[in-house]
Image 1 (cartoon, rainbow, N blue to C red):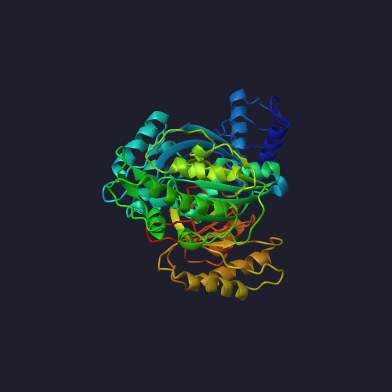
Image 2 (cartoon, rainbow, N blue to C red; image 1 turned 90 degrees about the horizontal axis):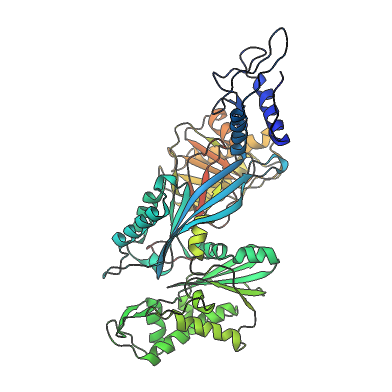
Amino acid sequence: MLLALSGMSPIQQNKLLTISNQAAFTRPRPGWVECGDSLGAVDGPSGFSCEGLNRKELHDSDEDDHIHEISIDEKGAIAEYIWKIDNIKLTTVGIDIGSSTSHLMFAKVHLQRKTQMLSSQFVVIDREIIWRSQILLTPFLPDNTIDADRLRVFIEDAYLESGLAAADIDSGAVILTGEAIKRSNASAIAELFAADSGKFVCASAGHYLECILAANGSGAVALSRKTSRTVLHVDIGGGTTKLALIKNGEILGTCAIAVGGRLIAQDEEGRLVRIDDSAHLMAKAQGIKLQLGEQANAADIDSVIDALSNAVIALIQQKSVLGTAQELYLTPPFLEPVKADFITFSGGVSEYIYRRENGLFGDIAQPLADNIRRAFFDGRITVPMLDPGQGIRATVIGASQFTVQVSGRTIHISDGTALPVHNVPVLAPTLSMDESFSVQSVAEEISLVLSRAHLHKGQPIALALKWRGDPHYSRLRNLAEGIALALVTEPGAGSTIILIVDGDIGKTLGHIIEHELHFPQKIVSIDGIQLRAFDYVDIGEAIQPSNAVPVVIKSLLFSTGQQNL
């Protein structure tokens, strides 16, 4: 069979020839590529597909081979289909509801399948901010809860001004940060706005996640990667300071402390209208009493600011925070000092540190920034300061561009599985992947992590698996049987089992468990995702024709209390 390929690039010609040759094995009689009024195509590992590709006639007869030239539009449709198999473009949203400010951002994220060694994994190759909102002072009600109505109006106005609708959004995150996490209605607020903001938007909060988002969104991770240097990134918001130690573009450790620019706020008359717990703590340690509604003594406020800024300076110096300030830790400190080559800042306070902002908002952000900046000039901090590129918007940029991953194409999803799923706890068994690992060893390790997780009946779970070695059937079968043996009697029976594998074995592993072992529960087996220290996972609907699913890996921390992440 001959094919008209004029006007196509060599890559498109090769892919189209592959499609035609593979289609020949599935055609109903020799000499024809029959698919109604369409030209058949191979849709990844699933085989022959007719979707979306129109043609006029293309055949050979018993008497002689001949062709009918396909039109330019049809060539374009084929090329576009091929491109979509290996490329995914997502419209994402990031909504940051913080202690001091709230804002929103839309972005485009372009992911492309890695071509090395026939990998099915997708990686981000481009990010683009397409719209950003004004910055809103986070509204609170007199009872110290978040004002949901004012936030809703703000977010709805942002969608209208941007020209986007919730239906246009593929993924993203609503992030609650800093002191906003502690508000009694924080969890409900995040889930509410996540549901309203797009078809797959997650709700999330947590100090560790905020460290990661700020480090990425600020540009500090990119700076470290580009320079091959170690960067200590410091994000100072309204209620918390988050630090991330980054080496060669990899985050080695994080730390968070309850110091921020809006722990204390005064009205135009100088009366105290906000005093957060951290400010009360440091004031009490110095014998200072702060009272809402009363005039504040300037010297007392300065003493509290000095104590708070000294705690941040100590962390930048990678020294221990001493005395009462130790109670400000929100996460454990860095495990061990690593010499940084540069210090970078983001968050609202960074706008004062880099002298991009000089307006006053009745809080302590400017004097806090001045104290930290002074430490670079008086010799207390000897590491040079650099500007990573983004300041107050770093976290929302991270939320809109750095929360989502996309699975590989070789995935397995049982028929009738309801996606998306949200807030699925991730368990990470330590499996031996040597050549002789056994069914029993796999089952025992998975049973161990399940017993520690205190699962409820019907609760979905996700197992994070690291695959090592060749994907021989005997090894895959042992892994599948071990998983099935461990899960068949667990409390989660009757719910969906999610397997997340770093290697390209998701489809085969899921097929064996469901169709060969006849496992009773629905299986979602995805690959191309690497889990690190996050706690929960969200999985969206499959994206066609690439046959991949969007995945958000996150940590959650709401009003249940502060946790070490």
